[in-house]
Length: 435
Image (cartoon, rainbow, N blue to C red):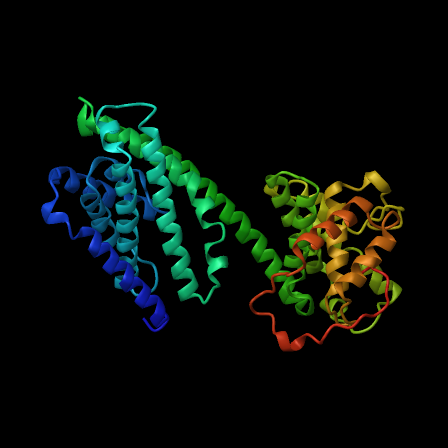
């Protein structure tokens, strides 16, 4: 209770009052109450299965209610499932009240829009394709209400700026809820058909299968993220002075990849490559990683083994794809003077050329144990000077364009102590072996 700010609790109370206002006309509403009870029980059952076995909320039943029932009656459907749902953390009554109010408002808004556009008559008459238009408008209203409410609670509970809290919420929710809306429309049409509610329930079977596949994909993706996070945390613990470097190199690699026009899946792989490029440091003695001052030739040769150590660590992780080549070759140079194999020009994998630029850029703009950070313009000038001999000019140009558009605001790990980082000052040096 204490963890939830008072303003967030007040926001939840306002949402609850809004939901109650939507339910006020119920005594005057003529609705098939048996259908309300059946849909509410069906949603409660689907919600329990979805929460425990899959992820998220099962919206087709709610949208079917918005297409079948008067708006105040439709707003009743999510209440039992939300009020008796499982809660992992936080005050249960508060979270359940919030979820119930949020869904009631969203369903009510979807029902009002659908009703106002003549969607109910289109559903009863199975009037296609016209029935799709009110349904689409109702889905948009449903998404919009959820977006506004979710963004508001994020801003108030986590002290997040409103624009940041709302950014991307609507677009991310539109596609999955749109699919659920089509399923809800099919349920509503079949419900009103001669085959009745039993036929409508059959729509849930393929939706359940698709949801299971979707949930499996997300679990696998979460497992990938957990694997990478564990490896990065191990490197950060071993080399605490460069904490956050891996994440920043991943961010810069992603910016370069996007500027080069790579597809989203490859951008993600290159982000992984940037994050994991230094994982081989787990095999390097800690005293070398934390040494103040320059390395001796023998120490440098030990440091230069870290790409091969890293490749050995990640080569069995299948989902990394070409990121494994980047881990091995990100210290190669176009002129052949790099390591570990002295590859020349196009012999160096493209992913490694991307990470090499991102790595050198963050190394120059970050304070290390042996030197202070350079300003971003000075680092870019050094990259440009070394382009063609050490770095791929395409990658350098892509980074410069991306930084010109978006700037450089790297995410810093939450446990990085800000008072340990001295203020940056330019120091002349050449990007080479860095720790």
